[in-house]
Structures are given as C-alpha cells and as structure tokens.
Image (tube, rainbow, N blue to C red):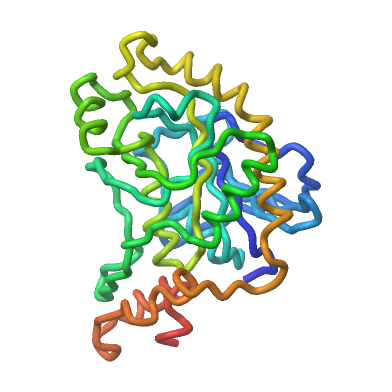
Length: 289
C-alpha cells in the first residue's frame, strides 16, 4: 500500500481535476480485472490524492459496464481510507433543482445485472449497510458544499437504477410515491464495496434534471444532462477542494467504516480456500492473515 489516503471518483463530465499537481499515473491490475482508467496520483490543496474517472476518460463505459470491484479494490491497494464520489443525478422532488447538490445518506437498489460484493469463492461476509454513507464524510461534504457557494441538501434517498436508458414516466412516479429524492446509475455499488473494503464513502450528487416526472420541464435527454454537467464541473471541483481542506490529516479510524469486517466474516478459517485468502488479502488480511 502507499501513503495515498484520499480517493476521488469523478463522475460524468469530471474526467480530470483542475489544479491537481500530477505525480504519476498508475495502472493497477486486480484479481477482478482492470479499473476504469489508470489512477492519477497527485497533490491538491496540499493533500495527496488518487483520482479515477468512473466512466474512463472520454466517457467510454456504461454504468452496467463499470468494473466496480476493480475500481474500489484499486483504491484499497493504494491505501485510500476516505473516498469522495462525484456523480450526476436526476431529481425526484421539486425542491431539488438542477445545479443543486445533494449529499444522500440512503440508497434503494433497482439494478439487475451487477456483481457488488468482493466475497464468495469459499468466504462469506455480511457487512451492515443500515447506514451506507459514512456519517463523518456526510457532514464534511455538506459543509464543503456550503463553503463553495452551492445550494446543498444534506441527507436523502438515492434510487440506483440499471440504465443506460432514463426512467419511464411510470417508474419516475413510483419512485416519487416511495419518497425517494434523487435517481442515478452508479453510486450504490460503490457504497456497498467501499464498506466491504472498510473505506469511508460518501457522494456529492450534482442534480442535472427533473428525471421525466415534471410536466412543465422537458423529459431528460443525454445531451441536456451533459450541458448541465458542463456547468456543474467547476462547482464540483471547488467542492472537492473544500472537502480536502476539511478532511483529517493522518490515519482514519472511523467507528462505522474502518472496522466493518470485524464481525462480518462468518466462514470457518480452516475452510477458506487459499486462493480466496490471497485474492482478498488487502481486505481481510488484518483479520485472517
């Protein structure tokens, strides 16, 4: 592992970090395949960070095509203990307007085709996701968004849909009737895997549209979303800089995230295949080494 403790996942439109003093680009091969892109390691606001564009530079990967396990595993290998996720979302509530920022604290899963656990192959683990977002990062992200001048909503429920198509009107209205706040295509798998990797995780959800439920607004389109994203990029980069100023310097010991596997590993040690232990050593080595 390295001394990079902070990771940044750039979402749609955020393929690089302005002001990042690049030290190196590192390509990491994992037991789960290749991450979306090489990790860009550099210094921003005096902090060493690892940056990864979620969809690859040039936006080459669909949400379903993302190798979520490889992306999070790579951050773990680098030594990351706090992960900043930036993503574009649709709003399911009138008060969450385009260009607002939401820092959600809950998720609802509507995906169908994704692997979202590191475990299996002879090793069973059940981590808690009652609070899927790190509460420490939740507070920091909200404060940083306000400091950057954004209109921010702290807390809320994020529906994670499969995509790549946007919602039907019926789906959008059902999600609203459930009390959901925003909708996106990527963040739940990241949150699940980050918890299994004992990495603190939270997301800056940049609102781009009203999905398709708002009768006086045009239905969401890819071109329309990308235009708002381009307007949001500068704000998202400023918020990330404000987050970095507020994160603690040094090792992190989060009561919720840093020990998530302590009581989650249920397979008898002698029955775990050696190959599985070797594959998951960066995650479970402290418990099963």
